[in-house]
Image (tube, rainbow, N blue to C red; front, side, top):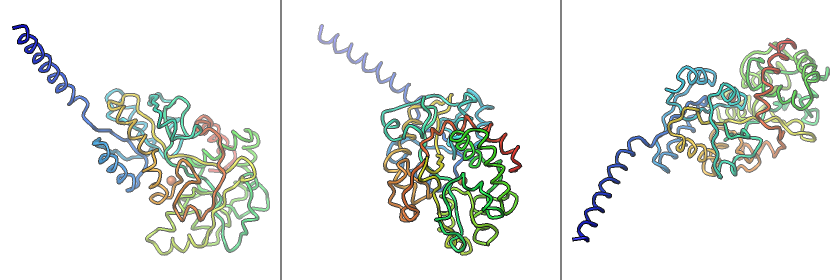
Length: 345
Ligand SMILES: [Fe+2]
């Protein structure tokens, strides 16, 4: 009799447990909602691989980082966003400062992402690296004439430099790194002198600066490395020609190293799928994705010099500025002010 009562108890517990598990399951629906500034098809492919590996579905909303930040602000607690992905640390710090990100950490994130490429408290983590370098005319410039960002302020470059508008975050982050390394006064003088040395007022995209180098409008442009990859692999023969005419030079190799930035992601404050969001960040910073980025988007992996991409290898190994990328965000408004004063529109 006692045995039977024990047996019944067990059944009751089992029924209770299965009802409990059943009610829990729908709540923890396996998905993760990504708000991304990146617009690469290869990212979609990576997300599919992640789903295949984990069973977690990835839903993506694509828009500019600023638009996504505004959207999360407006949605507040109701926001379905789990991860915000941007193409520079400056925008992640902006989202962090607006209180839109929460901290997260895990042993693999801490191991896979170098310290200066993530927020110290885990509000965001980088997963690819880009360097803002000097792109020069192979016809008219010998790379031995190039050295540092600071050297671009020398009057010898008068009428020879090309750069896009200062409203662009890549230039703001470069100037922020110059403020961090050389101080405000020096950064002010640099921006004004570089502006004076330009071949034309700032206009167009990074790719347009390279096209202008190839067209002979100027000799040296400031641009991000992966745009060279996009020109090399362009379906437009004219852009392939542009790529053949330009060389990549990593500045400040005898000093602090070339300026770098990241694409990265942070977990949104109101995320309903935080554990899945952490898993996605672990995947993007992990070996499988890291091996694919250089060949797909021509960005550097987190370990910048360990890539099997022939194109990236052809640019040579380089030393990167070890400045904590959080500084780029902190000094962003200072950089914007200096650009306005220096007439670099
Ligand atoms: Fe870009």
